[in-house]
Amino acid sequence: MRRVLTAAMAALMAGTIGLRGDDTAARWWSHVEALANDGMEGRNTGSPGHKRAADYVAAQFKKSGLEPAGVGGYIQPVKFKTRKIVEAKSSLALVTGGKTEPLTLGEDANISVRVDPAPALEAPLVFVGYGLSIPERHINDFTGVNLKGAIVVYVSSTPKALPGPLQAHFGSAAERWKMYKAAGAIGTITIANPKSMDIPWSRSTLARLQPAMSLADAALDDAPGQQLAVTMNPAHADKLFAGSGHTFAEMLALVDGDKPVPSFALPARLKATATVERSEVESQNVAGILRGSDPRRRDEFVVVSAHLDHLGIGGAVNGDTIYNGAMDNASGIAAILEVAASLHETHATPARSILFVAVTGEEKGELGSRYFAAHPTVPRASIVADVNTDMFLPLFPLKMLMVLGLDESDLGGDIRATAKAVGVTVQADPEPQRNRFVRSDQYSFVKVGIPALAMKVGYDVNTPQAAIAAKWTAERYHAPSDDLNQPIDRSAAGKYVEVVRDLAVRIANRTDRPKWNETSFFKRFAGGGTH
Image 1 (cartoon, rainbow, N blue to C red):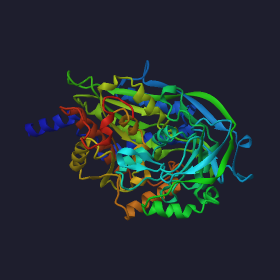
Image 2 (image 1 turned 90 degrees about the vertical axis):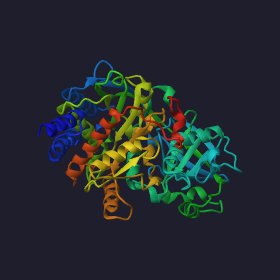
Image 3 (image 1 turned 180 degrees about the vertical axis):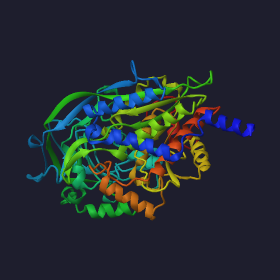
Image 4 (image 1 turned 30 degrees about the horizontal axis):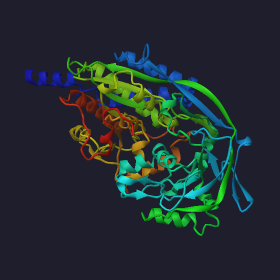
């Protein structure tokens, strides 16, 4: 009896035994309720609602005994530049042979203000298919076309020959702009592949009048020199191809068939005017440390992250204007709060320190985590790994984990072992065309060379679980209906929290630092360099 008790106490101290699953789930949901009620007004970056949410997280960190790891407390302030399009004083038009065809903003196309647009410009249009130039992969969609002074038109898909994480990496706006700028382009028109759109145009266009943001730190500008960024409604994309001898449907069939897509100059030129209201706001990252117990490793850190912000108040859907963001991502913040509470209550003593970070600005382009990765509140070289939680969707029992970055570092072995211990299998992203790898905050850590994972409740394609997830995405993702009145499998949430906790402790207790796999493309960023 004594030996059993001693083993149990050892496990408790290591953080591998927590509260009962139903208690964990109940407390997880209480945090979701606190963060996603209407009083938080959707937690938009820089808003009073976001500040209230950040104060709530800081109070929970303090309650869980975490050391403050912000700037003079738990908060790390982050400054942003904001831009809002004045649509009545802005325009897009196609000019062909002296004839001008206006494009209707909101219906045909939108001017993105994530890039600070030039007040006025007119430039030729060049279609470049997938829009990629990756010499080491023998991909060059720019062959035979001149992009100097042009606006690049591309389908936001990538060849399936690229591994999933590389599809996402090279398909990201920042990586694309590096290619286009090097070729002399001045702007972009993005056409989404309708088959991989998470949000239909009719809903996504509602956000066009919301302020967009960039970090005030000019060194972290992802689009230097870009004068215009336009998103085109796929249903109206043939307006761009008129007179070219090609149709968008023809190009899309090649993309969907994973076949080579031609590049060619389009007959039209784009004429654009943009009037923008500019301002500045400050928002909050929140950080706290569970200090490690090993004298040699306590100054190394395992980051456990999730984003706190959502979309705030926006266009009405079924009469509701508050985008509560219950699953995106109050659920993830609630998970890391419960991990911290569980470790505190079980007096866990991991060897390394665990650094909990709630980041802002994810919905604006992962800006809060990008800022934290560039300006961490601990020495960056001391951060050994990041475990990120974003919209993990506990919609059905947790039997499988979808792990982003599974095969990029030896953290893959840690999550496989952690999941196996609770009877859960793991999978890489089954839908790489959705570019999840670069759409969550772990990517900010990857880009500075820190091994990272993000995890969601997984499913096999063409299963009832996949259909449930697809229905949620179509109906609730970035919609007011991602609120507190939706069906959630709380047992899945409780189990997920336990996996995150046990994974963080396992990494913290490793005798060696996590390392990139030799075959990983992202190994080149190790040492803190940027791509």
